[in-house]
Image (cartoon, rainbow, N blue to C red; front, side, top):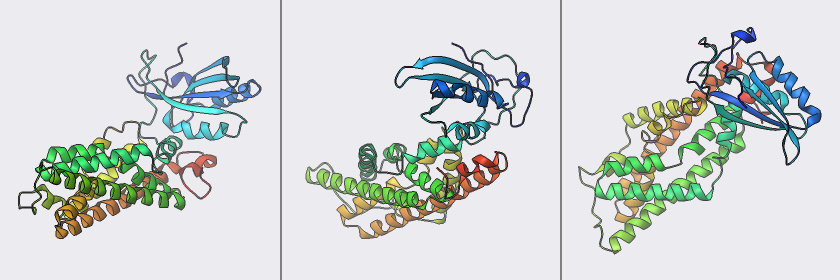
Length: 335
């Protein structure tokens, strides 16, 4: 079955004028709903002027039995539609990307920078708590960064920064501040603190093991050592962290988040945590203090920049969505 391939408008326009932009991905809404409520859902979608390609498959869902409704939306319409159908009993809603291959026109009306807050909140909510995968990845990242520090290999440190999952609980905490869900802010801070502690412990244990095996020889950092850079917080560190915080917040809210890789390798968090472990193992306490300062500067700057960026986006888009879905963007009653 082929659904229509249209993007959304930011205003009410004739349905025939809403056409897709070639090569652009559009949000595809999949709704499983009991047969008794199917007509209501379809009617709601058809009343949304930015919704096209509406299709119904009666009895398509076998367990539990339900009809399947499909529709393509513009990014600006997603929160409105999701909120409107949320109270229907037993309804299940999925959101995925659809990429039109055959396009009936060339006029482009949708906003690529529109934020689908329901998707962002769902994506980041899973990052607030410590998981087995989070622990494994952050400890492996700390170990790789430690080897990079010992061998003075910047590429290994960059690889550890790209591998580390520490940014996601951090930006989830920024979103929690904007939405005034302060319990989630606590979860974010705790997850980060535990993660960085585990990374430091992993680095410390690996360094001691390698020293005991004779693979490396612990020596104080010299002037050429990358450890000196990691353990020397400066105004430049603050500026880079602030810019990375803005870029990261923009990336997680937009459809194309490839810029996140650049954010990961721009912040000195995992390297600083690993440097703490290396410094403790080597007994170079000045570097431990410096690395702890570098870690603190980066984390605080990322929290501040990320929170302000998300708050600015919330304020901007709050003027462009219906009042009944604005609580998705923030407030104590936000889901």
